[in-house]
Image 1 (cartoon, protein in one colour):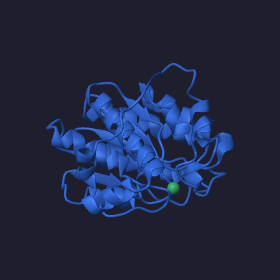
Image 2 (cartoon, protein in one colour; image 1 turned 90 degrees about the horizontal axis):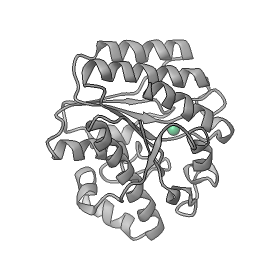
Image 3 (cartoon, helix red, strand yellow; image 1 turned 90 degrees about the vertical axis):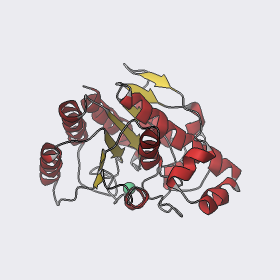
Length: 253
Ligand SMILES: [Zn+2]
């Protein structure tokens, strides 16, 4: 597995929301670096790439906020790099911010700017590398932006599991992945705010390992192991590193 990360993501000055909290990226990376995985730095997404996911008026508005545009286009580029690595046979986790799953074609909310994961899939599709994709969104919140951006792609399937308990949640994820008959790639919107001490109040650290493992097994069965994940939410900084690490260990295998 490769880790897509960059010191530039540590800069918290691009926004003043929970995703931009000082120390958040350090916390997320604390369980990964130094570690068994190489860190690869991304290039910012180009305007041409951003227009695969977003309307030009929205992209233009974001460019008027220099620090936010710089960070968000780098995050989008990180997801694109993770997608390309995954397609080439190297699983990848993009540890980026701002998150993206609440970014639609025409706007964004919930600490997001560009639709990182959906954009990565659209780039692979535009390059003729994939025709279908399965997205598992484990953030505590629904990936409404991802759904909006991928709405016109019938073979892109977005799944947000919701269940009252962690055990039922894991059963749901396992059943949905087991029912998948084909996909060219599996992508995970890896939010960690469903953690028991975060806003979602549900999953424990080993549950993230289990989810990563289930995704790995499904990808190996369906698409030669092609899989990547992109960081979304996760605000309980004390345990964020342990949760990210647990997921990545299961995901990398
Ligand atoms: Zn969330």
